[in-house]
Image (cartoon, rainbow, N blue to C red; front, side, top):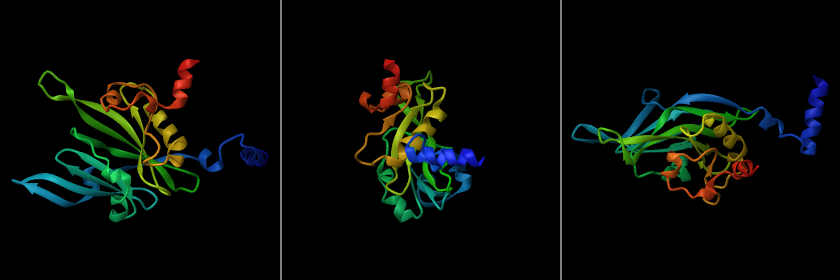
Length: 217
C-alpha cells in the first residue's frame, strides 16, 4: 500500500495523473422536492400559488434556492439567501415552462467540499405538441460550478440522446466546473446533441472540444 501511495504522489508531482483530490471525487445526494424544503416569499392569486421560493439543505454548508414563478424555475446556490441571490445562476431564467428534478447530485473532493452539482432539468418544447395539444417535455442534465468563484451553469447533457448522460455530467463536473469562468466561458455540451439541446438554440461550437476530436478519429 505504501509503494502505491508513493507512486501516486510522485506521479501527481510529475503531472502523470490527476491530483489526489480529483482521484477521490465522489457523489452524494440531496432533495429539492417541496416536502424536503421550506417555502417563503409566496405570491397567491385567487387562492392559487403563483410564485414561491423554497430553500433546501445541500452539502458543505450550501443551500439550494429554487424560485418558481408561473411554472418557471430558477435555481441558485449559496450559504445564505443574499449570497445565492448575487450569483449569475440567480438571473438565469428560461421563458418556456420548466422545472428541476427533485434529486441533486453533489460532486466533492477528498476534503469533502463540493465543487459542482448535477441536477435534472425539463422544459416545454412549445414547437412540438402531443396528441392532446400539450407541449412535449425535453430533458437535460445541468452541471453547475460552486465556489470558490461564482455559481453558474457550465454544461448541458441531453438525457434522451445519451445513454451515459450521468457519466458525462460527472465528467463535466470534475473536469470543466472547477476552472470554468462564469460570464466568459461558453456553456459546454457533452455527448450527442438531441432535440433538448437544439431547442435551446445553443450554437454548435458550444459542443465539448474533446467530443469533436473523438468524432474525427
